[in-house]
Amino acid sequence: MRQLLTVLAVGALLAACQKAPEPRARTPASVPAAPPAPKAIVPAATIDAYKLLVARQIMDANTPFTFSGRLPPMLPAIVVLDLSVGRDGALKSVRVHRSRDNEASSAALAAVRRVPDAFPPAAQLMRGRDKTLEFSETFLFNDQYRFQLRTLSGPQ
Image (cartoon, rainbow, N blue to C red):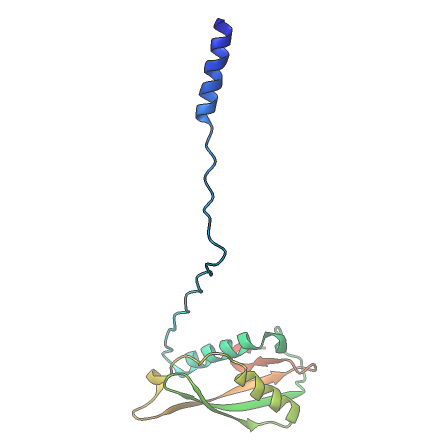
């Protein structure tokens, strides 16, 4: 009998030491997930910093049409676009400044227009009553008509 009480006492102690399973939180299937928090927009202090932000936004919106790494020794197409951005970051205009290849020009214009959101606000970079910030971006194309942006390509 004493042995039986010892076994029961040990069993009770072991049972008391076990962690109870935590109840699962149940969420109704009809409750949608919370939307991701919006990205904080940090204003650029210089035009070069602004061009970096814009170039990243263009590249992010065009991943299937870009390439990375070293540039080829001979670029089949180079397109320079002039962009005009409003105080709030809205694209006001984009036009081809220089190009010798119509297909590459069309691809560069489409890449800028493919950006889904406005660019970062540019008011802090404008003088006085300027309504737009104007700058250029150079698209560097490889043989497959994929591009890198000169602002992001760095020294080669």
